[in-house]
Length: 112
Image (tube, rainbow, N blue to C red; front, side):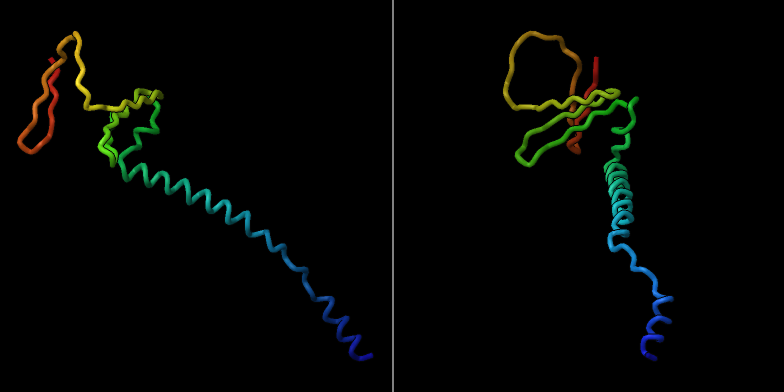
């Protein structure tokens, strides 16, 4: 009889158990914040914040491992990718300017 009374006394102070999945929502929110901050950090590291600006214009030259060169041009919201080849071409056209190679290897284009 004594044992039963003690048990009832402790039942009054018991608290219900928490839901074990309740913390998952907080982990999801934290992971979304982490992913967005990593994307911003990568854009800043590569100086590509202009890619996010809808009024900016920029040109990027990219060389792949296999030696192919791509020119990425952005004007406003429009992005164009062009692949450069080493094939010789012929035809008629208009001279646009002159390109010079400096002693340190850099190329300078001078429009006419």
